Length: 106
Image 1: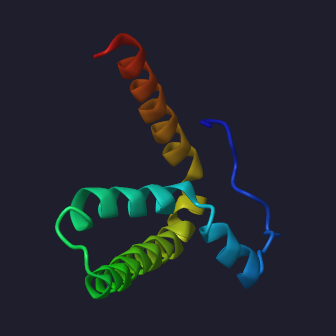
Image 2 (image 1 turned 60 degrees about the vertical axis):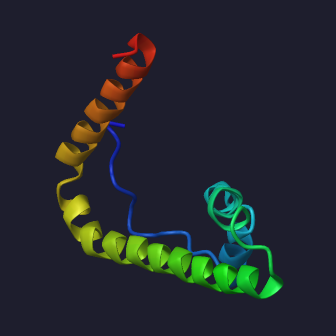
């Protein structure tokens, strides 16, 4: 990771349909839904209308997170391409620190 370089000019663009279908098998989204519904919604609500309202609200929250993540990526892309070496070294050190803390229970 510390020695990797940014991609060249050409990037592989995915079609809207591929990205749309990919979202249905995204593990983070599945775990988000399972956690929210089993921990916060189903113990307190049982009517179909309430569950649908929660589904729309949770979808909106997830969409807002995705848009925020994409916007932050767009903002930081130019900066990270310019300073990729220090950033990669810092991320490699953080990854190493996490691995050591997990291995030795620090």
